[in-house]
Image 1 (tube, helix red, strand yellow):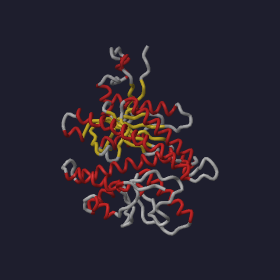
Image 2 (spheres, rainbow, N blue to C red):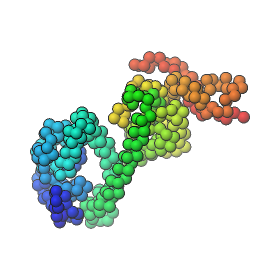
Image 3 (cartoon, one colour):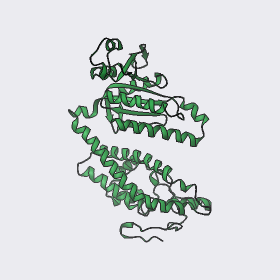
Image 4 (cartoon, rainbow, N blue to C red):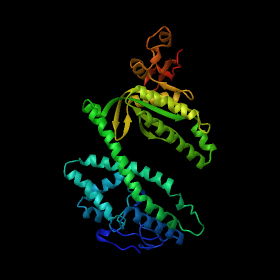
Amino acid sequence: MAEPTEGGRTRETPPGTDRDGPGAPGAAGVGGVGGAGGSGSAAEEDDENIALRMEQLIVGYERQYTPYQAARAADVSMDLAARFWRAMGFPDIGQAKALTEADVLALRRLAGLVEAGLLSESMAVQVARSTGQTTARLADWQIDSFLEALTEPPEPGMTRTEVAYPLVELLLPELQEFLVYVWRRQLAAAAGRVVQAQDDAEMVDRRLAVGFADLVGFTRLTRRLEEEQLGELVETFETTAADQVAAVGGRLIKTLGDEVLFTADDAGIAAEIGLRLVETMADNPTMPELRVGMAFGTVTTRMGDVFGTTVNLASRLTSIAPKDMVLVDDAMREELTSAGAAPYSEKEADAGDPRAADYRYALQPLYRRPVRGLGIIEPWLLARRAPRG
């Protein structure tokens, strides 16, 4: 049985040990914070105890505080504490004893940044929200990937705790160190982009290439494929997209199952990403067709996401792009031709243009068409330019 140490932190709790008993609060909800447990069946109580033991191993502390007690221990108003917890994605747990010393320390630390003037209250809430949303998805992915043994014991007669507990115990410190490493690298890259900005306005509103890549016929696939097959397809798509975007120097903003959103500082980088995505997916016979739409212009960046007319235009171009094709707007065409990555027209290139050997892309105009909310647009079909002999 685990023995409490100073501050409520516990030593290892071996599988099968029930510290909290059947009346302990349940572990349902975001962040492992849940309401009070009920008087369910023995199987339900066993599941609850498994979750509690796993939570204690991961968090490192026992549950001992109600929300009011945690706020008071952190010397933070209940109103501010509730705002932070909601931002992090914690559900309303009433006054159940479901919080730990770790929750108190985190609350005290975040409120301390506000008190010291390093963050405004609204900024602190934004930090809590962005961190909560990002890590919630990360945690779900890691549980799905590493802890399948929770529902599929490798040997008959083994409980889920007996399978999962030692696995989590081994993985937790390594994954924690890796998470901090990746976060620091990404933070350094983001700081570098801010330093290179010409002025404060450019830190928020920047000229970027924005692209969407969309799997064709995904809705039909969801009706035809088994859940496991569909999950594998989405995983392959997201992995391929992430690899191709990163390899060329772009940024993957978000994945939406059958669609990814990416940006690049340079139109040439975005063009290469779009074409590589189409080519790579076309080479995989198990994957559906892909279509890509890209636009270049002013983009508002906030909390890791991008907004604005350029983003909307890229999305609309994707919806009208032919299968296995890349469409770009006129502004991106202008960027590519001005940089010498594509000719203004193939006719000029064929007429002895001295730069013809340096052109990497070909651009073919399509019919101008109206797009709701964006007026008349002129899409261009982007392709690799065949080498000229």
